View 1: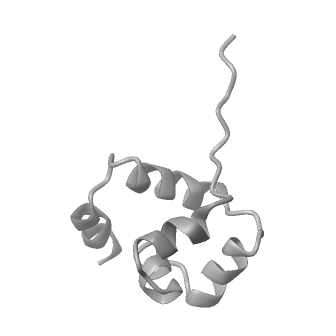
View 2: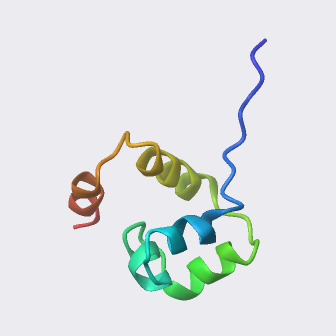
View 3: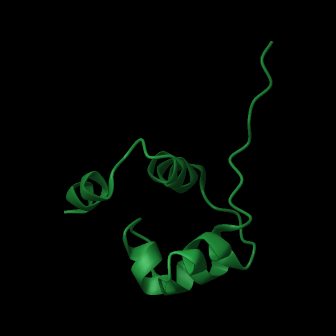
Length: 72
């Protein structure tokens, strides 16, 4: 049986900072408020649907345009 790979976003604040985005700019694209994003960056568990969306976008399976279109 294959081992399940856990989605790990423990370094999400570093990813955001590397892109030179503030919390509002980064998290809004995923439908998350700045304060919610701040809590996730501080260690609060990211809900599975959001983690999946982050993984899809961060891995290039969903483009920035597709993400923006879906948020409309």
